[in-house]
Length: 230
Image (cartoon, rainbow, N blue to C red; front, side, top):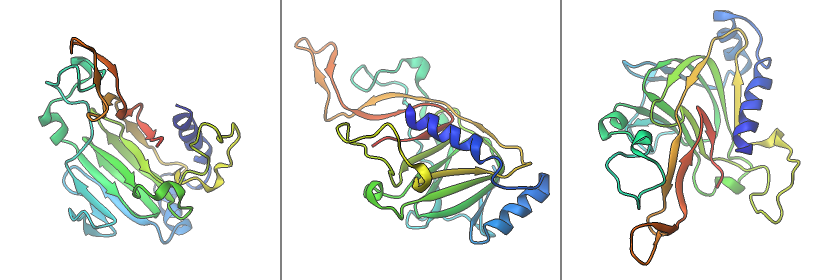
């Protein structure tokens, strides 16, 4: 939860990072970050640097219908959620996930009424100072009804994740997850939470097999924005 708060605080503080208003704000964003990858969202198709987005998993930006959410129809060994937290396969499939898999700056604009921006630089990113992604919200409207609308899975961790060595004070200037808001632009990000899903290999049942006595976490995400703790 601390990292969620940090990310949201970063959003508020970053609002003044870019100057201008409306279309001028979007032009200013392009001027200040000329090397940023442009991602234009649309329910009719997503455009990356002027070209139709790839579906090839090796591409730095690609799309898929593989959103992580709490699935309906599961039994008690699946997770801690209820049917109220669950979503059908059809609802999940309706969401387009825009995957970002390479470090860099990405300027997002446009509308995605059922989708998610997912940043994942790989399992080794946590210890790689170069594994940094900056998202510029440059007039976006993103809605996700089954999970967070923007999620950082794996990026550089500027603070220790070891409970014994972690510090209460962390210099976030080198953080792997960065979000800037172009001043004067309107950005709406609406997401949902994902109830705790157990790691199936870690589930320990009671003697009668009727309850879960112990388990590890595979997934659990809160809020419209989420930065995953390893």
